[in-house]
Image 1 (cartoon, rainbow, N blue to C red):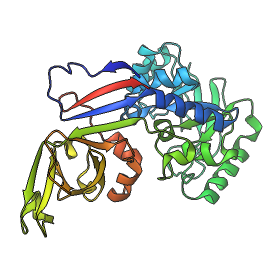
Image 2 (image 1 turned 180 degrees about the vertical axis):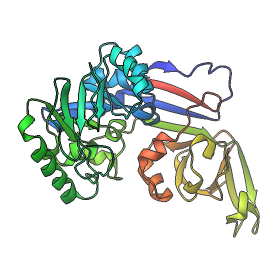
Image 3 (image 1 turned 90 degrees about the horizontal axis):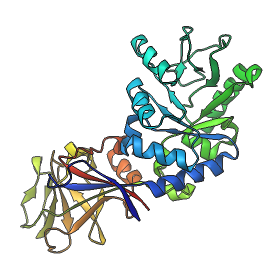
Amino acid sequence: MSFSGRCAREDTYVHRSELTVDLGALRRNVRTLVRALAGSELWAVVKADAYGHGALDVSRAAVEAGAAALCVVTGAEALELRAALPLARILCMGPVESTELPGLRDAHVELAVSTNDLPEGMHVHLKLDTGMGRFGLSELIQPTRGVVALMSHLATADSDRAFAERQLERFEELTRGHTHLTRHVANSAAALRIPAARFDAARCGIALYGLSPFGEDPAADGLEPVLGWRSHLAQVKRLAPGESTGYGRRFVAERPTWIGLVPVGYADGFRRDLSGTHVRVGDDLRRVVGTISMDSFAVELDRELPAGTPVTLLGGGVRAEEHADVAGTINYELAARISSDARRARRLVVDG
């Protein structure tokens, strides 16, 4: 395993936790998706700083491993990628402001458009609303010379296959006379489980990062989590019966209980509603108890452990999908909200 990057000024700060981005795992996920697509192109979705994994590092690795294009949402994201990757195909899925168009045009960024107003001098992907009920045209306008692709977005590929298939039927109906254009509609869930959705390309995000679009164990689809998150026990203390830990006294000891305090909280992205989830303390899974604070949380221990004992928040069998179940959310949100602020966390990029 080799190190390909470190957070800036890491020697300046005392780090409360460490984030590890494994580009080797990401490359293997790219190859897994390319195989699943069976000839359709893989377009890597790297919006929102690659779901919190680091857009520049992830984009380079994804392209090297076989991704044919990169997808972002904002003009600023697109221009940052273009500066680092001058030859990559980049699609900005927008919408963007008219003032951004000259810069994107000069940078040869392709643009998804959901209205009849098509920008001049750009490669355009016309977006159709086939059932998502968000951005998109209800009917296909006549593609002009600058239109290079037709696209849509599936609302239920991870949960309601019948509705997804109705969307695909509508997309096919609208686009069948334009098969000379690139057609793309599949997300990660559809790329993995709905062959009819693959068309010419698939825009995959969550699966790139080894996270399941179905909220299951990602290994079921041959995926490896890319992000690891580790901290340590900063202090260990014994609660007597009737004593509590944290705001609101949400955990009150019923018997003598050892607890460990971990210097990570919701300001770092370990959400307040993760109380009750499990993290790995040393080699053992232990329950998070009490109210999660802005800067710390408590774990229930079965014995006294020394301060400094490693705590794994993600990775090593601790899955984002399990945390999401406890929090009543999705793994996408958990990953995207983890802070890589160098003043609070050390970020390592490895190639394993």
